[in-house]
Image (tube, rainbow over all chains, first blue to last red; front, side, top):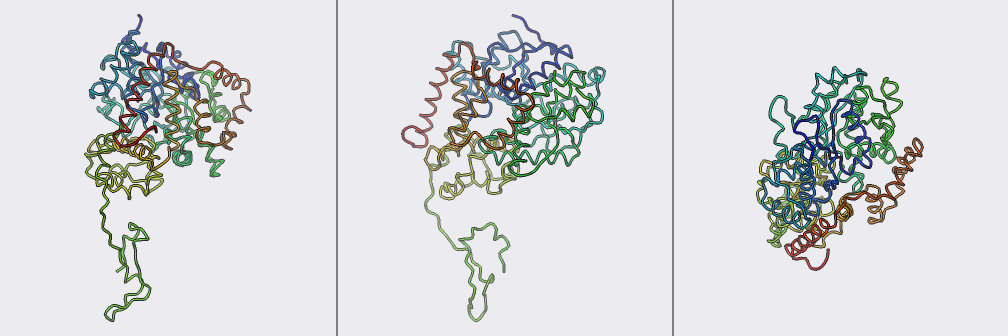
Length: 309
Length: 246
């Protein structure tokens, strides 16, 4: 049993997307952690969180899936698990909330866990944090500013958080607690981190708009309209880059940026990068170390022009 | 007097006489606009209870029709016909025929949860939308939506192996919904990637096919989840009075 109670060493839950289309986020998150001297220990033998799909078959199956992951973190001796994917992060938080407040969820989790042959997770044992919480709280802006080698100065960024980082608010009891805490109406942790790295954040009203990620393929026309609105608004706000912190949002923006051009004839130029990619390059890592080559959209020329990577 | 709220009334319920004189007064054209009266008798008294019995629909009775959900709704901003507040109203009154007019768009809820965030009564309109779409399918009013096909494909893989593999979900989804995989935009996307990093991507794709991601020692979890899901599905069918498999 190893583990730790502070943020220098936390349990890491990458989830399925970070092993597939979101691999650049996985790579850049690990690279940033290493560069900042933070240790990530991957959950042993984790399972999928159910994303946005399993809950539509039955929400309590999703509760079990996340509860199993939380109990793995507990067994490994951790009291914090960090999930960079909004879907994973949201579902772990939701399971924590439901197990503390809904007796039926507790009953189903206990029943499936018993049959699966492991202890049922009890709420209050493991705190789920996002990659944004992790960097902001383990390092903080002051320290980040000192560590920046390659400032993002002059890069105009729209910070895009999506849906699952802030909604529904009742599953995030630590948010909206005044100065220092994250806001569900106007989140700012990513803005804070990238500002410390030198970026020029633009005023962007669609921080928590929806990209239609749940129906990215099953209702593509809707998703394309929603994404195009986000991208065109970011451009109208003067952004050159949309910074993301969720693999579903990120891939959705990239895919439907191409689809908007092919299907609707609307071409846009804003670049889409994970915040960990931007932060990593600011910390002096190369573009390939933060997985820029793994993004669907090609931002290499732009980064070169800005003297990054 | 012209009716200013004409846009709120269905065209077929508006009657206008081109030439009409009543008691010597010329009321031709919009001066004679009437809304045809109608009386409703076919209320479905069970509809609210049936939808409330499905996962997500539990709190529908709490709604007091403030409209915060529709005001906050992502899909409503794209398509004004998508109106959660109105559908909750219809369900609570049992106006099934009216609800069925919109049966083909209710599944389009993107689960952004802006409604749940805005709702002052904890109705969880997002859940109600999912329960309603589910109800429409169980009752046979609509075929399985593309969203349901995707959910089932995705969940099936999770339950089977503990993890998903994205390209497999995508391929099987296109097959299920009988769409060609070679969507022009998807082709453009993959071509762009393959052109930039051919070796890297071929290796990754090859790896995913050979080495399918899975959670170890998952068999017992799979059995336990399957058993539970079968129970829930039977209970859902019973709650809406549907017969047989779905």
